[in-house]
Amino acid sequence: MTKLAQWLWALALLGSAWAALTTGALGLELPSSCREVLWPLPAYLLVSAGCYALGTVGYRVATFHDCEDAARELQSQIQEARADLSRRGMRF
Amino acid sequence: MQSGEAVPACLRLRRPGPASGLRLPACHEREGRKGPDPEPDVAWCSGAERGEMATGTDQVVGLGLVAVSLIIFTYYTAWVILLPFIDSQHVIHKYFLPRAYAVAIPLVAGLLLLLCVGVFITYVMLKNQKVTKKPQ
Image 1 (cartoon, rainbow over the protein chains, first blue to last red):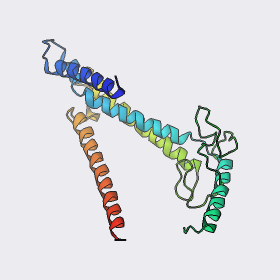
Image 2 (image 1 turned 30 degrees about the vertical axis):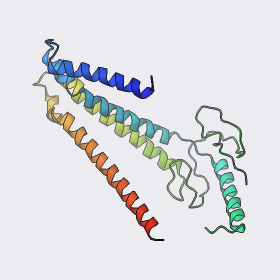
Image 3 (image 1 turned 90 degrees about the vertical axis):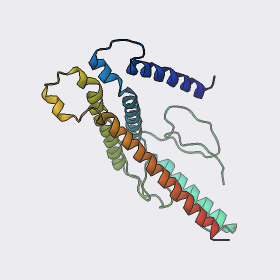
Image 4 (image 1 turned 45 degrees about the vertical axis):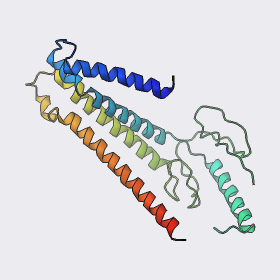
């Protein structure tokens, strides 16, 4: 089974469980505070997934290491390449 | 000119990479110290604005993002998960909007995001079309 199929299965399962519980189709008598928590749950999961993504991106940006030597060497190689290509006739 | 595609060792987080044409020195970790100003058209370094390579701004922006995401997460968790279990006469309910907004605000924000992405894509496509039409 492909990853997409797995994800769709999981989503369908959880979605139907959530729908069954919120609409009361199973006939369960949940306390009202539990129902209050249950119905915004998909939105909550989406927002928390978004927050996790944002936080991870921010953390990686903050802890990224600069490579000064590598940068300098890369720039000199770029100059080399530019000189070489313009010698062969390429216009920048 | 060498044609290698290796990434410098210090940029790869944890995995060893293939050795190929582009030989780059191993980079040791340091606290953010500003490097030499690169050429304005070299913009591959981390989070760089054109012509600037400042780990200081990167750290500020990154930590700001982390802080924003944590704030949003804790407020939203308190709103959705904790509030129904707190007595409705408690003073803390004053700091939270009515519950319907807990779904409405993220929904509207998501739609706005999709709108912005769509507008940006349309703009780029139109610009490309004009560029290809002009030489004709």
